Length: 138
Length: 138
DNA sequence: TCAATAATTTAGAATGATTTTAAAAAAGAA
DNA sequence: TTCTTTTTTAAAATCATTCTAAATTATTGA
Image (cartoon, rainbow over all chains, first blue to last red; front, side):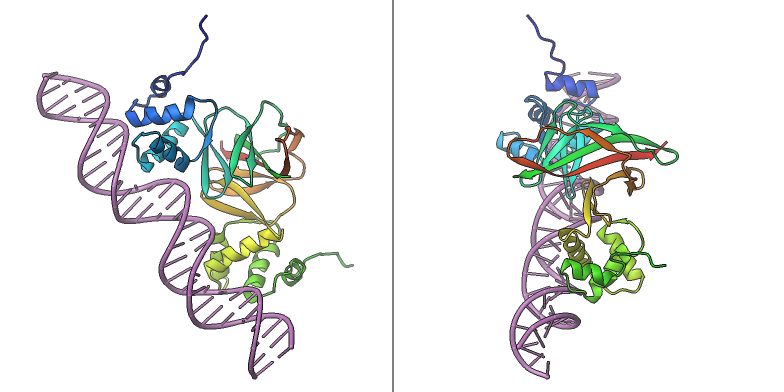
């Protein structure tokens, strides 16, 4: 029996996105996508790559995260001024943010629902809607 | 006829918050609170003060915004990595963010309602809930 | 295969926002 | 006043991120 696993391989994702599968991009894509959903900063990903023996510069990590975001492989989440988080789940969903630890967490499924939407100012359209639920230790 | 206007005077706000009403804090409090709700960055407030003839350093503007936030006179809103916005409406409410202009706007009244809340992870409590509706020109 | 061309990576400099430092100035208490 | 504490400040330091220009790598076409 064979399970359908779209984009199992990093190289497929890159090809589908029209990005050349370079050594660095492949290695970063593997770290990002091969192990379920992740929430990560550029520094964190760079450290992880370096510790895993992948030689890649911090500038390339930034470039790559931004490129992946542009083509829709990642979503950038704003939770704190000063730090950018990237989420490997690019579909619409919301987040817990642990104010104590700085950890970002998906809010599962539809457990947050916006029951009404505001009137949007004249000549404007709604893009993304971000809900961040700040949590801390009891 | 006399309208009840709590905290009309900056000095009252500072006293109530236990902050010494220094020249700088008073001037900044007036700019922030005497003219309806505002959404402002440190740089913006510093420029406004300077242009208005108030001599205050950028470091003091940062200090003051952080102190006001600590005592609950302001609320910090995270909409974009890299820039901190401060909102003079410290009560629970939500925001439009204009991705084109970087302008932050209150969403009026109860026009956004969260109809259900997610289960919070073990031993954690919910703090603030931030809803940011990104908008852009049609 | 071998240039020629184009895209990518990189180290390091530059930028922008914010914080820290240590000293001077201002405020409150005695 | 004078003493003590708090606040302000300029300047340096820090942190995240982007830019630059050169070196490397990938792709294309003969």
